[in-house]
Length: 137
Image (cartoon, helix red, strand yellow):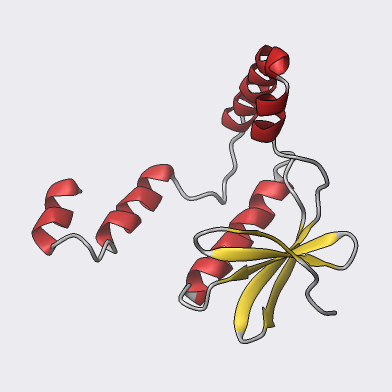
């Protein structure tokens, strides 16, 4: 299969259509494969928990870059919807509260702790000196 039109761009990846019912999250060439592999694994774990997130199809290399193929979910962003329908903000706030309650009510055994992820980020923060990393930890 071949990547389709560009849907969006972020700091670490570009999102392309991938057929009619999937998307390709194609990471920038500076992203470490270990990060991408971890994201793919955690995305599978989260999907398996029953939370309303896209299914993961797998990892693929395209144009010399690594990407993850996800189920495509149609629809606009809630932020865009709230901006265009201010009268609905309270309803959207309620939806977000219910979603957050659902997320925090689950125990997902294979998820790393937030503390571990933050510590890892600090330990690998190149913009901090060794002393600053130690002090921050």
